[in-house]
Length: 346
Ligand SMILES: [Zn+2]
Image (cartoon, rainbow, N blue to C red; front, top):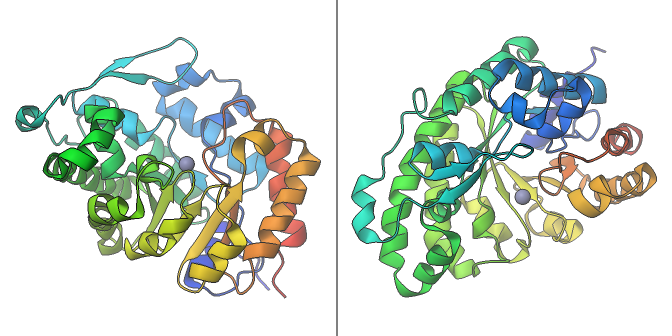
C-alpha cells in the first residue's frame, strides 16, 4: 500500500472518511524560529527566512500541515487599513492607534489591495515559497481575519463591545468594510497557495459576546468570508478562541468544514454535539501544557483528545490555540508522536 501523504490524511479527516491515523497539526508558526536560529523579528521582513523556519518545523517535527504565516493576519490588515503600529525589538508588531473613532470615520477606511498594501505582500510571498516547496504533499493553512475581530482592531475592542449593545448599526457598517477586506485577503491567500482558509475570530468568543450577538453580528460576516474559500474549492475552517461551547452549532452554520476548538471546550461533548457534521481540531492547552508542561503531560493530554474525538474520523489533533514562541520543541514532538502511537484507525 502506498503511504498516504499528509494532504491525503487531512482531506480524509475533513470528508469524514477515516484516514490511516489521526492527523496532527499544531498551530505553530514563529515557534519554528527555534529550529533555524532566525530571530522572530528578523524573519518578519523576510519571506525567505520565514518560509525556511516554517518548512524546517514541518520537516523536523513531522506534523501534517503548515500554518503559512508569521504574525497575525489582523496586524497585516489593520496596518494596511491605516492603524498605527509599534515595532518592538523582540516581539511582533502591535496595533497602537485605531483608525475609527466613530461613524463619521467609516468613509475613510480603505479596503486594501492585498498585492500592494503594507506588509501583506511579504506574507503572500511566504505562502508562495512554502507552496513551491511542499506542492500537494502537505496542506497549507492560512489564517484570515474574522470581520468582527478586525473591526475591534480598527476601532478598539472596548468601543466595539459598547457598540454591540448601544449602536449595532455602527458594528454592521464597520463589519461591512472588514468583511470586504477579509474576502479580498482570502482570495489573495488562495492565489498564493492556501489549501485551507482559517477565519480567526477571537473577539467573537463566548468568553466576550453572547451567542445571540455572535449570531447577528459575527456569523453573517464569517459566512461571507468562508464562502470565498468554498467558491475557490479550498477548505473553509473557523478558529474562535476561549469558550465556544454555546456556539458550536452556530460555528457550523458559517459553512466551516473544520472547527478549531480551544482547550476550554469539552472536546468529548463537542464531538457529541457537532462531530457528525464537522471536523473538530484541537485542543491541547497551548500555555499550561505546550509551553510549561512536560512531554509526558502533553502525551497524556493528546491521548485524551484522541479518545474523546477520533471515533469515526473527522478529527485533527492540535493545540487549542496558537503555540507561544518559546514552547519547547520536545513538547510539540510529543504531540506528534502521540498521534502516530494512539491515533491509528484499523
Ligand atoms: Zn485562538
